[in-house]
Length: 343
Ligand code: AMP
Ligand code: MG
Image 1 (cartoon, rainbow, N blue to C red):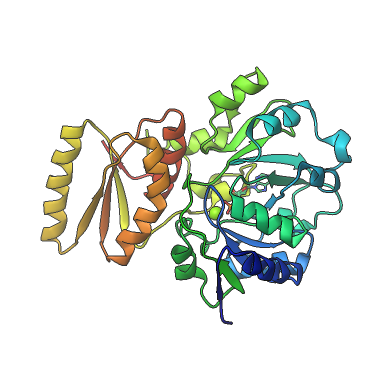
Image 2 (image 1 turned 45 degrees about the vertical axis):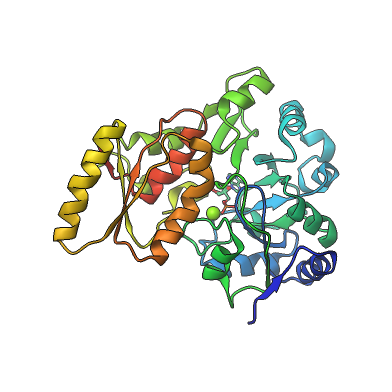
């Protein structure tokens, strides 16, 4: 299949909308990462996303909408099923990088939710994404537009690296502003719980809801593996609420190693380990975001892909402090390193 490169012109967005309505796949930019979209209500179209990505079929999609009126048909119980907390966070953070889990209506096919009785919904703030969803006239199921297991794409070129020939079209929409995927917030239980950390942090949501917003236990167990990387939890022992958590993620071809410590300690270790690697015939690259968490979020996936293109064998990365957005970026860094942290 020839993958069309579409611009952001009105005519091209119309072409993209038509492809989606007809059951095809279109990759498009959002403020977080590029999504690989299909009509969320068309089981066959959604099934072809799993195929194009090589994604396990129990890993559900996020459904993207442009107007909160759409919730009526997607959420169980319609308007009454939405709940007070959801209304508060939607008012505060939509459109934006926050995904909310709702009980699902029967209009949403099982394949879209990986067989779960809940559905993840988001209203992106990116203008191109907004225009595309409006033009398509249907809710758009979209996971990140990478091959399963690879770093999420934050440019159209990164999408093409994985998806050229596998999908109908990609909208060439420049680079994504946030750079890591949306925060996933579960509001279906007694307490609000974050299943995936993102730009919108628990502190922020907590302020809006005026109640504690905890991270899912599995997520913390995941990050706590740093303390004990070789003991305890293995990814396969997880039965997480968010199925995406149990799969390997963000793995570049190079081996990623995180290094903890002060600036001087980091530099010393990088030199020492770099020399050791070189003696063994391995090339190494260094990523140091110098505690600029916003830049780290925006650049991390793009940097992994770029260093892979340059064929480095090892990537040394300076860890970030695990608070606020730093926690969210560290979640991706730890996964990409297979929880290998040098202290
Ligand atoms: P992606 O769009 O590829 O970044 O992945 C979507 C993420 O949202 C995955 O981690 C999924 O496990 C998670 N997700 C989607 N739908 C649900 C749901 N109904 N319940 C819990 N997590 C979900
Ligand atoms: Mg993904």
